[in-house]
Amino acid sequence: MTGMCLPSWAGKTFEKIHLSRLFVLTISGFVIGIWLFATPDGLLGKADAIGYAVCHRIDARSFHLGIRTLPMCSRCSGTFLGVLIALSYFITVKKKAAIFPSKPILLGLGFFAFAYAFDGINSYLALIPHAPYLYEPHNYLRLSTGMFFGISLMSIVYPALNQSLWLRSYSVRVLSSYRELVILSLLAALFILGVISENPLILYPVAILSTLGVLILLTMVYTMVVLMITKKEGVAETWQELIFPCIGGLTLAVIQIGLINLVRYLFMGSWEGFNFL
Image (cartoon, rainbow, N blue to C red; front, side):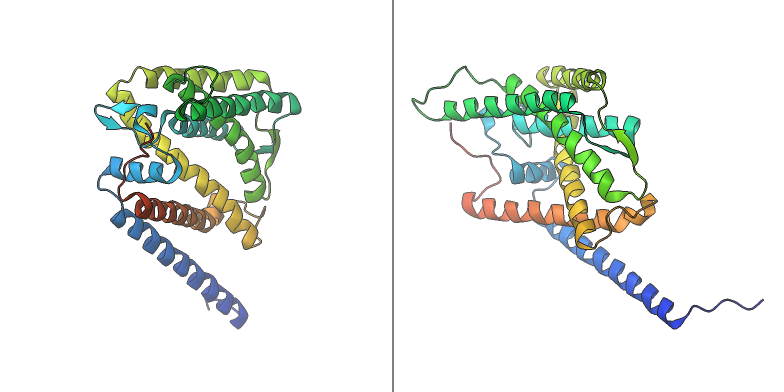
């Protein structure tokens, strides 16, 4: 039986796709390899480098694993743990949900964001000598407001991502009732209790997971950017079609982290946090 021959135009198209994917893999491998080489050694060292790109890492405003400061302050750790909690829930229960929460739910999420900003401003004022502030800042409050803000953030990013990814996304709200918001809040409360116990067996995975949350969130956002630039929004039917857009998103995320790492390191001369206190 004679094999089928592809038309010349189809062969050229296939070759272009192959070369473009090879190019993406090469650039991605190069970028990630350089970042891994240039950042501190060890898993916690890499986590520190990610935290270094998004967080002030002030020692007194962070939880500690023994004498070691966690990769991010208590507020940022909470934020990106909240991102992971919400993402895990949505992937498990909502899958391709692509509709934003209703206005009443958005109001609740807005309250979380307001509490995050309010506590952040109060904490910032406490850094300034003789500046008035309403209450004594505390790492437990920073952790909690960050955690709930992370849930709010993912509740917006997740349906936006599904709209960008899928040809057939689900016409389902990512959060359809206050009951679901309460479930997420209870999950967040369990994590909060675990972190404030300051048990090393809990804080070590917290250190890794929180920085993983940074990488995942940035990759999600940049994947949407890649799809928009390549005009491939809303056309995927399988996960296999999204491998290379996601690799592109991850590469851009690492580039952003690496550039901020570089600028901050040149400014500070070390991987330590800011020393305001």
